[in-house]
Length: 175
Image (cartoon, rainbow, N blue to C red; front, side):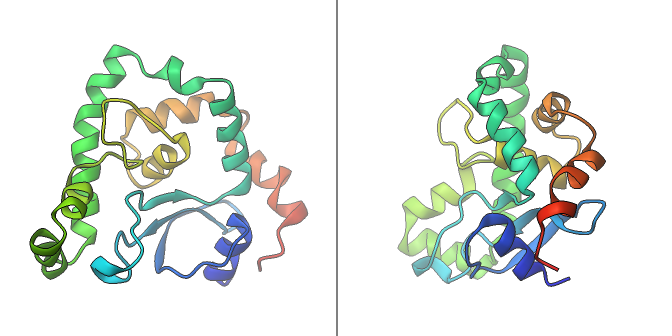
Protein backbone atom coordinates (compact mmCIF):
# COMPACT_ATOMS: atom_id res chain seq x y z
CA UNK A 1 0.00 0.00 0.00
CA UNK A 2 1.25 3.47 -0.86
CA UNK A 3 0.83 5.48 2.36
CA UNK A 4 1.21 8.83 0.60
CA UNK A 5 -1.62 7.96 -1.79
CA UNK A 6 -3.75 6.51 1.03
CA UNK A 7 -3.38 9.56 3.28
CA UNK A 8 -4.02 11.91 0.35
CA UNK A 9 -7.23 10.02 -0.41
CA UNK A 10 -8.25 9.96 3.25
CA UNK A 11 -7.70 13.71 3.75
CA UNK A 12 -9.00 14.59 0.27
CA UNK A 13 -5.93 16.63 -0.66
CA UNK A 14 -2.41 16.38 -1.98
CA UNK A 15 0.12 15.58 0.73
CA UNK A 16 3.49 17.32 0.45
CA UNK A 17 4.91 16.88 3.94
CA UNK A 18 6.90 13.99 5.30
CA UNK A 19 4.98 11.91 7.80
CA UNK A 20 5.10 8.66 9.71
CA UNK A 21 2.08 6.40 10.14
CA UNK A 22 1.20 6.28 13.86
CA UNK A 23 -1.20 3.35 13.71
CA UNK A 24 -3.06 1.28 11.14
CA UNK A 25 -6.56 -0.13 11.09
CA UNK A 26 -7.40 -3.80 10.65
CA UNK A 27 -7.39 -3.31 6.86
CA UNK A 28 -3.87 -1.88 6.96
CA UNK A 29 -4.77 1.74 6.17
CA UNK A 30 -3.37 4.61 8.26
CA UNK A 31 -5.54 5.73 11.19
CA UNK A 32 -3.28 8.63 12.04
CA UNK A 33 0.03 10.20 11.09
CA UNK A 34 2.83 12.12 12.73
CA UNK A 35 4.07 15.11 10.71
CA UNK A 36 7.40 16.81 11.07
CA UNK A 37 6.57 20.14 12.79
CA UNK A 38 8.89 22.16 10.49
CA UNK A 39 9.39 20.12 7.32
CA UNK A 40 10.87 23.07 5.40
CA UNK A 41 12.94 24.56 8.21
CA UNK A 42 12.02 27.77 10.00
CA UNK A 43 11.00 29.45 6.74
CA UNK A 44 8.68 26.68 5.59
CA UNK A 45 5.28 25.39 6.64
CA UNK A 46 4.60 24.99 10.37
CA UNK A 47 2.69 22.06 11.87
CA UNK A 48 2.09 23.08 15.48
CA UNK A 49 -0.23 20.06 15.53
CA UNK A 50 1.95 17.21 14.23
CA UNK A 51 -0.55 14.48 15.24
CA UNK A 52 -3.22 14.08 12.56
CA UNK A 53 -6.14 11.71 12.43
CA UNK A 54 -6.53 10.41 8.85
CA UNK A 55 -9.20 7.68 8.99
CA UNK A 56 -12.28 9.17 7.29
CA UNK A 57 -14.75 7.27 9.49
CA UNK A 58 -12.96 8.20 12.72
CA UNK A 59 -12.80 11.82 11.55
CA UNK A 60 -16.54 11.76 10.81
CA UNK A 61 -17.39 10.13 14.15
CA UNK A 62 -15.25 12.62 16.09
CA UNK A 63 -16.71 15.51 14.11
CA UNK A 64 -20.14 14.36 15.30
CA UNK A 65 -18.87 14.31 18.90
CA UNK A 66 -17.64 17.88 18.49
CA UNK A 67 -21.01 18.92 17.02
CA UNK A 68 -22.66 17.42 20.13
CA UNK A 69 -20.34 19.58 22.30
CA UNK A 70 -18.53 16.56 23.73
CA UNK A 71 -15.47 18.71 24.31
CA UNK A 72 -17.36 20.91 26.77
CA UNK A 73 -18.68 17.88 28.67
CA UNK A 74 -15.28 16.18 28.72
CA UNK A 75 -13.30 19.06 30.10
CA UNK A 76 -14.02 18.40 33.78
CA UNK A 77 -11.78 19.95 36.46
CA UNK A 78 -10.11 16.54 36.95
CA UNK A 79 -9.40 16.14 33.25
CA UNK A 80 -8.21 19.76 33.08
CA UNK A 81 -5.52 19.02 35.70
CA UNK A 82 -4.44 15.85 33.91
CA UNK A 83 -4.29 17.71 30.60
CA UNK A 84 -1.85 20.27 32.02
CA UNK A 85 0.69 17.47 32.41
CA UNK A 86 -0.01 16.02 28.98
CA UNK A 87 0.26 19.46 27.44
CA UNK A 88 3.84 19.56 28.71
CA UNK A 89 4.42 16.06 27.33
CA UNK A 90 3.02 17.09 23.93
CA UNK A 91 5.29 20.15 23.86
CA UNK A 92 8.30 17.96 24.72
CA UNK A 93 7.35 15.38 22.08
CA UNK A 94 6.92 18.11 19.44
CA UNK A 95 10.31 19.59 20.38
CA UNK A 96 11.95 16.16 20.09
CA UNK A 97 10.76 15.94 16.48
CA UNK A 98 12.72 19.08 15.59
CA UNK A 99 16.48 18.68 15.02
CA UNK A 100 18.57 20.41 17.71
CA UNK A 101 20.27 22.73 15.21
CA UNK A 102 16.87 23.88 13.93
CA UNK A 103 15.64 24.55 17.48
CA UNK A 104 18.74 26.68 18.13
CA UNK A 105 18.29 28.58 14.84
CA UNK A 106 14.62 29.16 15.67
CA UNK A 107 15.50 30.38 19.17
CA UNK A 108 17.90 32.95 17.67
CA UNK A 109 15.98 34.05 14.58
CA UNK A 110 12.29 33.39 15.31
CA UNK A 111 11.74 33.41 19.08
CA UNK A 112 7.91 33.52 18.74
CA UNK A 113 7.95 30.39 16.60
CA UNK A 114 10.35 28.75 19.05
CA UNK A 115 7.98 29.45 21.97
CA UNK A 116 5.08 28.04 19.95
CA UNK A 117 6.93 24.83 19.16
CA UNK A 118 8.17 24.19 22.71
CA UNK A 119 5.11 25.19 24.74
CA UNK A 120 1.84 24.50 22.93
CA UNK A 121 -0.54 21.66 23.68
CA UNK A 122 -1.57 18.67 21.60
CA UNK A 123 -3.67 20.66 19.11
CA UNK A 124 -1.51 23.78 19.29
CA UNK A 125 -3.43 25.19 22.26
CA UNK A 126 -1.81 28.17 23.92
CA UNK A 127 -4.45 28.87 26.58
CA UNK A 128 -6.06 26.73 29.26
CA UNK A 129 -8.79 25.28 27.01
CA UNK A 130 -8.89 22.44 24.52
CA UNK A 131 -9.64 22.30 20.83
CA UNK A 132 -9.76 19.70 18.07
CA UNK A 133 -10.69 16.27 19.39
CA UNK A 134 -9.23 14.88 16.14
CA UNK A 135 -5.70 15.89 17.15
CA UNK A 136 -6.20 14.63 20.69
CA UNK A 137 -7.34 11.24 19.43
CA UNK A 138 -4.37 11.06 17.02
CA UNK A 139 -2.06 11.83 19.97
CA UNK A 140 -3.77 9.00 21.86
CA UNK A 141 -3.05 6.59 18.98
CA UNK A 142 0.64 7.18 19.62
CA UNK A 143 0.40 7.48 23.42
CA UNK A 144 -2.38 5.11 24.58
CA UNK A 145 -2.00 6.21 28.22
CA UNK A 146 -3.43 9.64 27.29
CA UNK A 147 -6.62 9.99 29.40
CA UNK A 148 -8.35 12.47 27.09
CA UNK A 149 -7.85 10.11 24.13
CA UNK A 150 -9.21 7.23 26.21
CA UNK A 151 -12.25 9.35 27.03
CA UNK A 152 -12.81 10.17 23.35
CA UNK A 153 -12.48 6.46 22.49
CA UNK A 154 -15.22 5.60 24.98
CA UNK A 155 -17.56 8.11 23.33
CA UNK A 156 -17.01 6.80 19.80
CA UNK A 157 -19.83 4.65 18.43
CA UNK A 158 -19.36 0.94 17.83
CA UNK A 159 -16.34 -1.28 17.58
CA UNK A 160 -13.23 0.03 15.77
CA UNK A 161 -13.20 -3.08 13.55
CA UNK A 162 -16.77 -2.35 12.43
CA UNK A 163 -15.71 1.17 11.52
CA UNK A 164 -13.38 -0.22 8.85
CA UNK A 165 -16.14 -2.38 7.42
CA UNK A 166 -18.59 0.53 7.38
CA UNK A 167 -16.35 2.80 5.41
CA UNK A 168 -13.06 1.71 3.90
CA UNK A 169 -14.02 -1.70 2.55
CA UNK A 170 -16.80 -0.03 0.56
CA UNK A 171 -15.20 3.19 -0.62
CA UNK A 172 -11.41 3.22 -0.33
CA UNK A 173 -9.62 3.47 -3.64
CA UNK A 174 -6.22 4.13 -2.15
CA UNK A 175 -4.63 0.71 -2.53
